[in-house]
Length: 75
Image 1 (cartoon, helix red, strand yellow):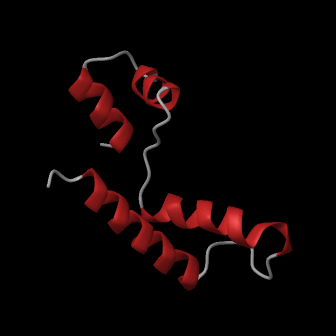
Image 2 (image 1 turned 45 degrees about the vertical axis):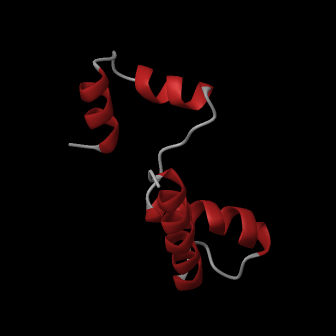
């Protein structure tokens, strides 16, 4: 089961409605792979000497992901 279908099932919303509502409120669902792609797209851009996220992009994504999870956790 995908993260998207799990959310839709848990929230009892029609298919596609969960992500639309999250996006409307400025939220995004991500994992290390999609975060690495976003970092690559933003920081490497069209001038990159590689087409896909490299290990540095993935390490930065993991660090960002860890930091976001820490901020989202109750303290």
